[in-house]
Amino acid sequence: MNLPNIISLGRLIITPIILWLMLTGAYPGAFWLFFAAAASDAIDGAIAKRFDMVTVLGGYLDPIADKAMLVGVFLVLGSLGHLPLWIVLMVVSRDALIIGGALLLWMLERSFWMKPLMVSKVNTVCQFSLAAIVLGGLGLAPMHDFTVTLGVMMDILMIVVAATTLVSGAAYLVMWARRVNHNDGGGET
Image (cartoon, rainbow, N blue to C red; front, top):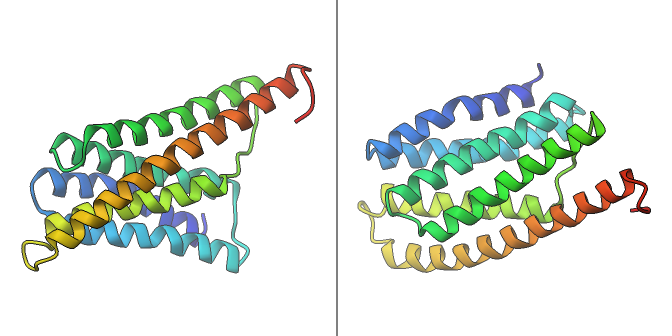
């Protein structure tokens, strides 16, 4: 296990701590831990690429850690009334679609390697940003007067997250349909 994989595993391990901090109302701690975890997502990828440490394990571990953290944070924020349920349902449904599609491809092909689409990477960054803005508003706004600015940023990011979630989900559906059609002898991709 190399350093980028250890960082991804660490992100997965601290996810329950972030959720516990949120559920207990310790928003400043939840924000800073989430911020560090989000930054670690960029760091592990940069290290893996820069030092030629890209591995099959990392190809699975990194997105699993991202999805576990983001889905958990969105579910908690939605259940506590800090995010509208429609955005939570979109984010969770898209990730369920991706996981379900990946399992279906694995069942059909018995092996597969899925490279994330660029729109999916953009969507992940937007989801991290929205969650950070909401957690920052909860954890830092009481100490500073950021509430109006954060509210506007949150509204804009919700629209961007919704759009990138729809486009990303649709792109994966098209990609999988072509791949399944090709495997069934129905044509080329």
